[in-house]
Image (cartoon, rainbow, N blue to C red; front, top):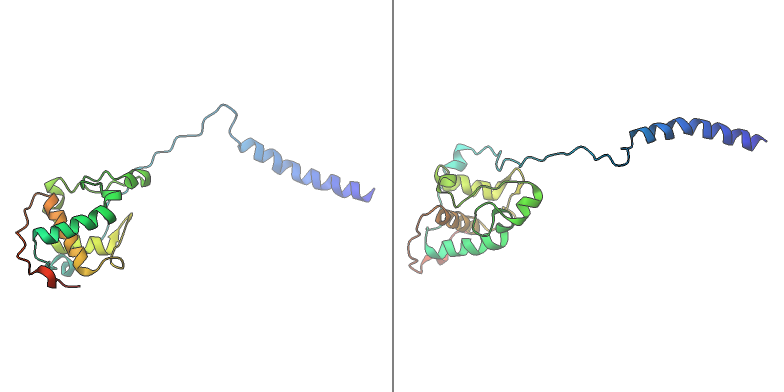
Length: 165
């Protein structure tokens, strides 16, 4: 008899919680409220005057730009798009809006130092590449991005092999 008394009290105490939980469930046939996700701003990074003033030690040549293009294809295109237009497959999935580098105005006001800093440090949804790329590789990416905005690199003289690491 004592067991049934304890069981009755437990059920009595659990019943209100069960009923409250049922009230919060959506009714059958009703649809949950739609939520919208706004794309994240591409860069909230604060760039110091020293970073902005960094000069690219890698010559802006077709060789360097080609190296940067290969890196871009394997490391950046998934978000920034194969052509640099900001429409990569991963960007859509992550609900981010990378900049369109094919628009000349996108990088026109950015120094090489700013672009280099963004590549290395990352910003917002973009991870920094400092631990994954050598210094000269990041500068090659800067040079490639300059070609996307319409600048033409110099012909390689074959002496670029000694770029910084």
